[in-house]
Length: 101
Image (cartoon, rainbow, N blue to C red; front, side):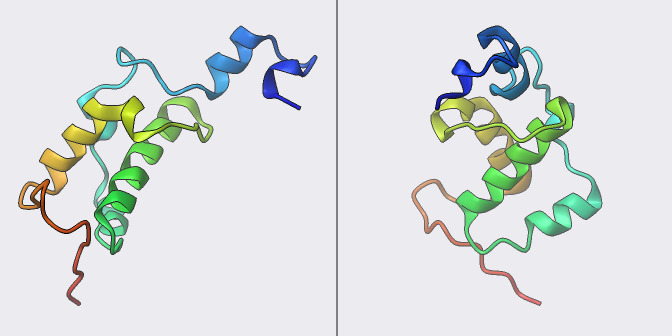
């Protein structure tokens, strides 16, 4: 059963609740993490997982629900997170974060 076939929500209502936020809704301020959130971000071993976490968290703050998205959907957000939190990581380098405690 597809989400659009439910009688509870129209297609537009479903999109408003669960679709990725539009670029006009997402600002740099939304993507800035608190110190606690950034500490969690640094615990991820894989860079792609850390970036996905940061974007998911920002979208959750905007919509108060988890939204499904692909990396292709969030290019601007992904670039901001990479520049702000992982400047030293090369795009061509390994996709791992090495956490030293």
